[in-house]
Length: 259
Length: 207
Image 1 (cartoon, chains in turn blue, green):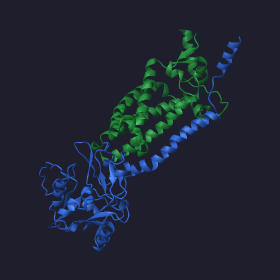
Image 2 (cartoon, chains in turn cyan, red; image 1 turned 45 degrees about the horizontal axis):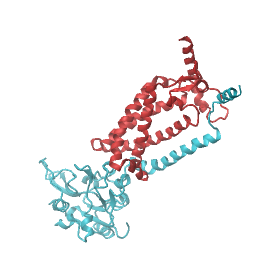
Image 3 (cartoon, chains in turn red, cyan; image 1 turned 90 degrees about the vertical axis):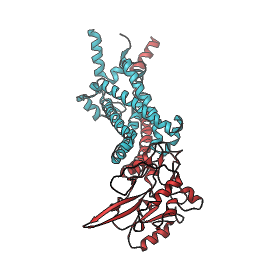
Image 4 (tube, helix red, strand yellow; image 1 turned 135 degrees about the vertical axis):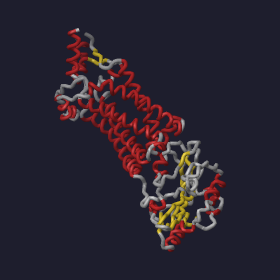
């Protein structure tokens, strides 16, 4: 994952909230529509679902009398150091593509749902088939030399796909808040934001959850030491201090034999 | 007066065997979930999904049987006297080739502490296991903590089990008989649990 790492740059200020990306994703990935209800906002659906890999978040900002929308394309951000991959017990269920994105193979998913709790962004969903689902960044299209469906459909070039280093340089040149450049070994989806990340519902300093770190990076090595240490410990005890033999019995038995 | 005295009745022995067999089933079905290092253990159950299925339901078997065993011995484990304090001070005499005499009851202080820990750990493993079973029904922070705690308790559990298995087999010859036949030799009882032996031999005389 070095020079060849590809990425998305999402320039939120260009987004007009048309949701072409949502539709294009559904169409390409053959995802069913979700039934929703009007809840007094144009944002629809209100959350990612097993059938919705990306969506536009509508943030309503009022400042005195003025009102404005902030639009943000919400999806898996394809962390360089990914919590989901760290906890996934089934090799190949979540895997990194050649471009550096994280795709999934439902056939290998064993439905433990660990990825759901390990994701710093709350992205993975489980559908009716009890298998993981999330944005896989159109690995199948990219593999065939095409653009990701959402980026292809975006009419305002909000979603830009290309080599990561180039997009990082471009984002920096815009003199706005660049999100995801270095966090979690660099996100595969970079954001250009007009406001603070929290306003968009993004964690300010995303990181691997502490409990996941303690489990995978502390408990696991300690566990190996603890397990083998216990085995070596009892065996060492056996040949040093030795077992508590029932000595009287052996002498009694001996006595019987001779008596 | 035979050479043997009863230590564990049939109910207690069956309970312990259920606890033990379900425990090892849980270990082998859960190892692959604990870390990818142990992915191969899933094959014992025919794959990860089957291992998870067995892990969940065997967890219920273990939870119930372990709590029953815990309750069965709770009164015998939940009191520590002067002799027990001495046991802790001398570490049961296990770090001594010619240990001092310790006047232990039916369970020595180490066994009591072990039994109490196992009971509490069983309940915590049950609670954290239940939360991890339905991860989307609980707040994400609680699920993360549950997974961590479940793994940590498992680790402490397995280390204690190794020591337990050693001390009840090759470490103290004659002990295993109490789990197989239920009775132990009188000299075993006199040596390891003199206070208990005095009690039961007193009962024998009076009856």
